[in-house]
Image (cartoon, rainbow, N blue to C red; front, side, top):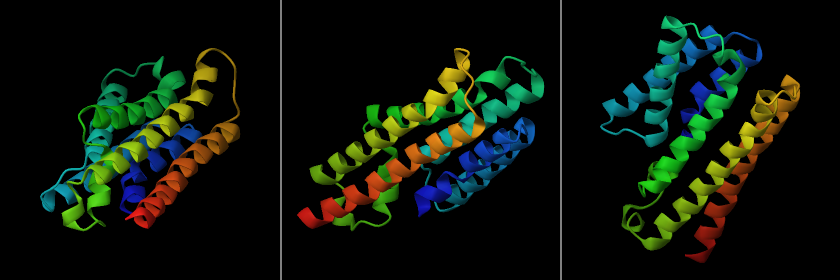
Length: 179
């Protein structure tokens, strides 16, 4: 459930973006990311997903507040989905898959350093990366000039997100069965 809470800024962003409330959506997403990050820092931790989310929305708020780029409005959804994909990919490349921190919250400490635990989190994070990349498809079609209805974008993106969440839950159950 914590992973869903970490996506709260993104959900705010996507909802307000759908209603062309870009400034409001960015600011609310940034504030939500800041609150979530501060809450984690108070506990003495910092999650990769939350940190990446905070950095993305901070940069976007700076960009929209101080430069007012007209080009951004067409690519803003693409940029958000690519940012999520980048967060996942960087976490994989540095061998700290972003799902690891959430998994540690519900897994006994003695399993944290096992190869199976790390492998499972790498597999799950790759699945999220693939989902985030897939979520860029409607935005890419718009970018190249093929308009996609906002509802189609939503349905496709939610299916990708739900697919990653479903895979995560299924994979965790399979891993528990094998131990």
